[in-house]
Length: 251
Image (cartoon, rainbow, N blue to C red):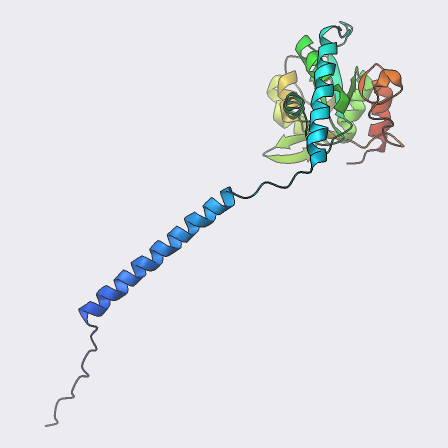
């Protein structure tokens, strides 16, 4: 009868060594957490970009000029015909450096954060006052039915399931506004131009228009339209500018 095979002895780790390893792991994790917190604090205390003296001079100058312009507005009244129901507004210029906070907030609320962005808004006394505050940065006026029609047909986009989709098919309008009685793009244009009961829903659905400036660009953007410049209220002649821009814009 053969002798039984001897089993190799199991290697064991002393308890003291296990405790030491566990303690080292805890310290390593604690150091990693502390380092991450320190990095986050350093990122939060990042140095502000250096600003030259010209920046503060320009900021003071713009603030002063804007305050004077706002004082002049208090003594003038904007005359917009009662027959006008909608307004076309487009951002035509920007500035490097500071911008008055009131101007920035209005431009953001109108979604005119970028150059050549354009929107169609409802005419109201409050809206007219807002446009007058930001006039040096925009041009606006009273669009015609034809100009609104061309604008929507050639450069209209809508938000469909969080995606920007060109309004190139009546199916898009039908799927979105069938319950409101709109089945085609012509119905949408009519609601916009006549400020129908679904105007707010349409403007919320549609994306901001991104256009191309007229041929040759806007000239004398620092001068008001009344003085043969670019910014400010163009009244009804805005439709000519719109048709020119839309004809040069591609999807």
